[in-house]
Image (cartoon, rainbow, N blue to C red; front, side, top):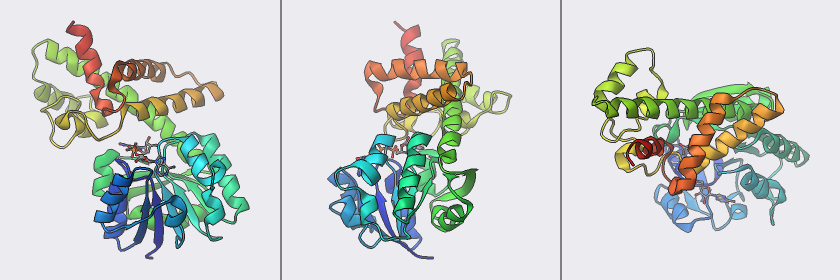
Length: 300
Ligand code: NAD
């Protein structure tokens, strides 16, 4: 099925997702608060919209890829000109942002009052996954909504997984990203210790990948410059997944831990490390730049 799609939020993730929708033959109307992001989407073949309201005029499907729950709530429900009022009844709204489950559930409830289908569908796989169309979508919503969204999500990802009812996608994503933060912190710590003992980081990474320390960061996202091509570490930690967004995700995980009385000592340790790195002025660097924190401590 080829659909008319409005895409809101054309940042590091949104833009390559738009590129894959266009490749798949969908018609895309693109909007972002930053005009240069809209220009980039137009160069890919999207129609530039001057506002979110303009973007959804002909939309059967709306996809948002914003930073926070506040932005999502404001766009659809509580802002100056809420988008839900402008959508044709029956439209499908897919929010791919990583946000809190409470906002996802409340937005889904509001969508229902407007006769709209809404799902939370945060993603895993990073910018490289968005570019390659190999993202994993983690969906919260009814079985019927999940089935309805599957064809369009498959255009941007390899795996579309149903976590449960509304909000479940966001809860599963918070669990995953807490684990990712722990993996990144542990991998930086181990690589830094190896380097300080004269080991070659490429050789050490290969050894750990072939051993029991193997993990996603070592396989796809090595934090040491020069070990892998096409990762943020190879580009001065630009692009990728911003430190400020990982701190936001760790806040979401801590909230989830607290409301469910679940102990999260490893997540809390990772949060402390990423927060230290953020307040040192690195909030817009990729999260693999956490390595710098370890290097700073042992090289005064
Ligand atoms: P980003 O900061 O690069 O892009 C977000 C974009 O949203 C910006 O261009 C911003 O101008 C735009 N925006 C914000 N409010 C808007 C509004 N009301 N209307 C229109 N545009 C608006 O962030 P990103 O890295 O693309 O991440 C987006 C989401 O995906 C975040 O929730 C993040 O946690 C999640 N995520 C990111 C990655 C990654 O590797 N970057 C991976 C998985 C999930």
